Image (cartoon, rainbow, N blue to C red; front, side, top):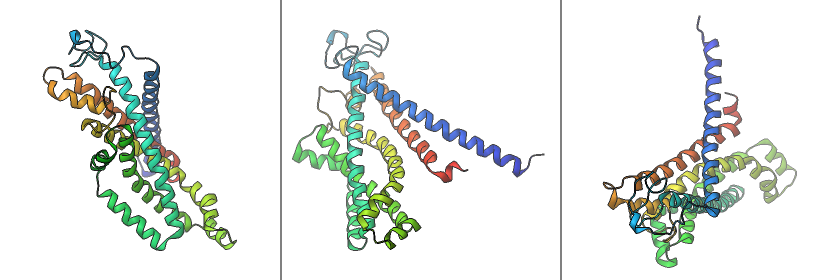
Length: 286
């Protein structure tokens, strides 16, 4: 006879197995992407900037493993180097945004009052400006390129991490161990460093992993609009932009970078969800 007592443990075991599988699959995808990105620094089948006009628009497996584009560039080589460009820009932007945002968030939680209100209003203003628009504004002053793309994405990431850090830090400040530290006369800076930050860092790491997927998409959008890494360095977004004219004649030019972007976003999202379940004791006990 099937009862709640027999079904619940089975469902719990299945849920834990699914969470572990999600973490493993996400980590495998990301490790593979990192390996590809590092490999591209030392080796590509053909120099990605090398043009072979006589062999242009060759389909996969006829000239090169994944064919060539409208200028005869080797598509596989461009995808490999594009992986490094996309990951390096996204990781740099998230690292900068998460560091600045976390510092602002935990400072606002420690000081409260006017500073907290100002931080929240500033976050609202930045959220009102999409990263694409921010990049266009920055590009007018700084010029297009890698630096502009990193700063534009990082600026958009700062309020995300500031809010996450603020909410988590406010919860930490209400804990008994923090109240005890305050009663012992510890300063707010000391409490933040020794008690608050160590207890919210896991949530920041999970948020950073998830935001990396969004950063990959944003970087592809910036490159698609010509605001990312300038040519001849290949990026997945610019490969998509260049493929628009040849969708009917050479659809693989759009399909392959599109799949690379989708796989990267999927990997980071699965890894972030898996880490959240793994690091959250409430989820682990379910």
